[in-house]
Image 1: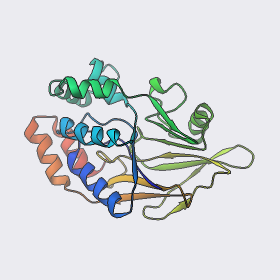
Image 2: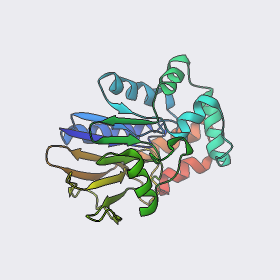
Image 3: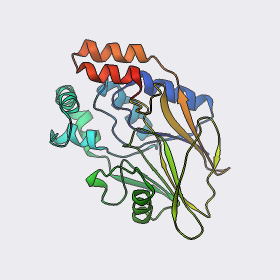
Length: 247
């Protein structure tokens, strides 16, 4: 089975549609969404409708910190642009969208696969997994062979070697990476809706569970259109420019 992994869609409808179309062409049979479905972008309701449809068909979906803020309105840890986007988003969500977000778990498991937005170690703390030490903490807490997360907005891969030491591995887009089950792996999927590694193209990953491989993909999409919708919505200019710069 091929599992499409998406994270940090951030209400970017153009990027979500492009990633789903690419995954479909690559033979994806299942989907997982690693949180932060909303925030920053101009289409929170449309994005939630698509993700909810996938969830109804069995997709794994977890809650991110922006999803949490869209529920409770608590933005104390966010920068002003992010907080303004959350306030804008909350004004547009109806009861159905709020109920969907409230029903999402912080961690989801399917066999030896764990899905979480940030670290599986105290997931409600929203710790960024940015180095081998934090990756080791998340792997230990998850207790799974494969851990997939988002939050960082830049794709990365870590693995536990024979001695248990966790090491980084730099993934190259479009190259299938063997991720055999005799080791443990943590993949930071990268952001579909707001990449921050200097590449504007949307990011997602495809896990081939039968072959034991993971491929990171970069997908061109209508960046100009998504940025224009942010500006038309009256959201902070910084959020539109960030899409255009890819950082």
